[in-house]
Amino acid sequence: AIVTELGRHLTDELIEQMMARTQERTPERGEVAPGDSGGLRFKSVEAGAATQVWASVADLAEHNGAYLADCQVGVSGGDLNTTGYLSYLLDDDHVERLWTLSEELVDRRFPER
Image 1 (cartoon, one colour):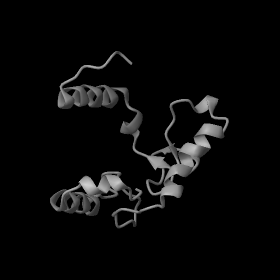
Image 2 (cartoon, helix red, strand yellow):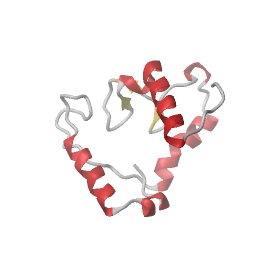
Image 3 (cartoon, rainbow, N blue to C red):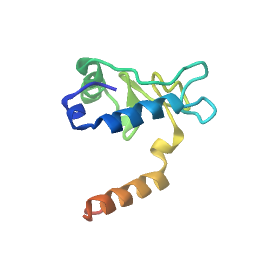
Image 4 (cartoon, rainbow, N blue to C red):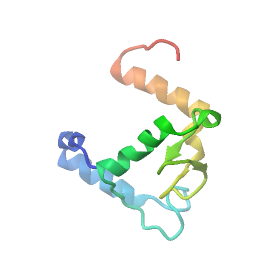
């Protein structure tokens, strides 16, 4: 996570909910690495942007659509504190449900992807 000006739109109640949720994450649910206490880890804006900059100049054609983190191609089921991600992230069923929910929440239909 990086701290940006978007945070100014968060209410105290929402911040408390977010912090409580990060403390509830568990290795058993695959949300944190074993031995990790959960919580948020903040990066500088520069560190947060580094992966996008790297992706724009690196030769990643064979990884089109891949999850990228910390200037590396992500690893499904890997360490969530570094380059790992949970498998649902790239699951087509989850993508479709999120797309549909997003359209419902903003009451707008978007062109087919």
